Image (cartoon, rainbow, N blue to C red):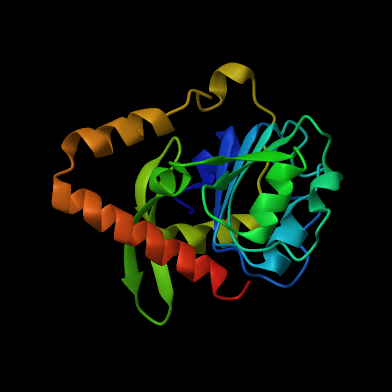
Length: 202
């Protein structure tokens, strides 16, 4: 059984990590309760196949920690009420979206989600999944793919959904409160490595 099944069915903040698939997603995959979507290190094809308003009918915000989506006007798939948030980095796609009034940059966006770096056959990261916590990115990605290909969408009352409270700030406060100066420097290097990684194919 997929250990994230309960989470995917009930979350209002979906984290999509390293979605690289080139095939279209099943038409039965949609997230009726998701209001915030975080895309971490996803490919152009992955972003293009995933981002449709029919899949996220309640979406209010996209946190975008990936390279160029390959489609310059992808934001036009969604109403103007859907906001975009980008890492505070100098990158043409981020800059254009912000200058055009479709998004903003956030200094803490990478810190909010990227927890550690590992290399096996590929580079991947430990991530913070909102409403779930710290997890191995490779493990999360495996079960995320399983759910995307075999979705089990439920009709649920609001009291059975995961809380929509913002746990990111609590997570950030904890990191800052417990970190030593050398750990803060390591965090800085990790952010640099992550951004270089997502830019390598952009």
